Length: 370
Image 1 (tube, rainbow, N blue to C red):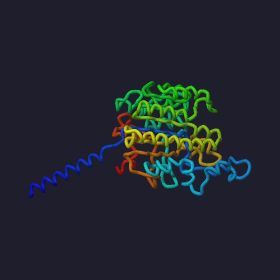
Image 2: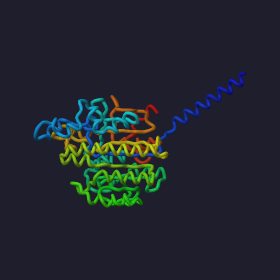
Image 3: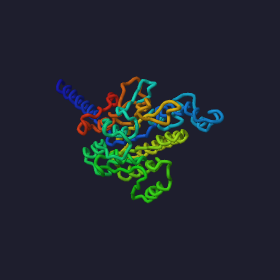
Image 4: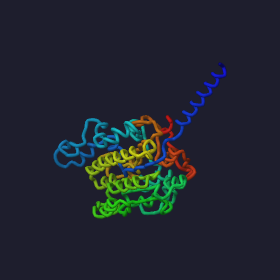
C-alpha cells in the first residue's frame, strides 16, 4: 500500500513538472515589429483632438465639419475606437496591451535627445541612443548592428527570413549596418515578386506620387510586406509606415486621421492572415510603436524635435502569446524605446546583450505574469 502510494505520488509529481515545464516554454517563434511614424499619443489614446480641429476650422463651427461628424464621440475611449475599431476593440481588448497613456500613469520615453526619425528608429533597432553620431535624417549607413541583423545571425536565417518594408526611403539605411544582410525595401523602390499582381503594384507606386519625394504611400509598403509574408514566411518582419508623420507636417489633420483609420484596417488584415496560418497562429509576437512623439497643443501638433518637449513621449503596444497583459497599462514604471530591441529578443529567449551590452534591458512588466 505504501509503495503504491509512493508510486502514485511520484507519478503526480512528474506530471506536474511536465506541465510546469510546458507552460514555461515560450510560444513565440516569430516577431513582427510595426512603427507608425510620429503618430501622436492624443489620437492613439483619444481619437479626434477637438483643439486641433478648432485651430484648423476657418468657417462655421467644428460641429459642421466632416471630421467632427465622422470621428467625434463624448469620451476618449469612444473616439479612439471610432478611429481605430480593430486596434482598440479586438487587439487591445482581447489579445494585447498598450503603454504610454500618461493620464493613467503610464509613460514611454525616448532616450535620444533629438526626437526625430532616424535617431528614434535607430534607438528602437539597436537598443541605444547614439546622439553624437546619429543626429540628422541624412542617408548615412547605421554604424551599429541592428536587432534585425542580430536575429538573422543568431537564428541562422536566410536573407528572406528577416525583412523590412518601409514607406520612408531612409529606413533602408537604418535597418542594416551591413548592406544586404536582410531583405529591405523602402521608399519609392521596386519590389520584385513572383506574383504578377505585386509586380504591377511595384510599377504603380511610381505613378502615384505623394507630396514627398522620399515617402511612398503606406498601402504599397503594407501590400509588399504582406506579399513577402505570404510567400516567404519570414521569422522576423518589420513594417515601417510613414504617412502619419508627413501629413502632420503638411498640416493635413484630415489625412492623419484617415491614415490611422486605414492603418487599423491593415492591422486587421495582418491579424486575420496570421490567425489562418499554423506557422504564425499563437506563435507570433507583434510590437507596435513610434519613432518619436510630437507637440500636444494645437499650435505644435504638426511638429517635433528637441524644442518640442512633448516629442520625447511615445507609446508601445504588444500582442503576444507570451504576455498576459490586456488593455491599457496603469500606474507602471516608465519604459524606454531603448528597451524594445532586447524585449523582442526576450520573447524568443535570446539575450540581446550579446549584440549590445549597453542596450536597454527587456521590459520586465511584459513578462511578470508568465
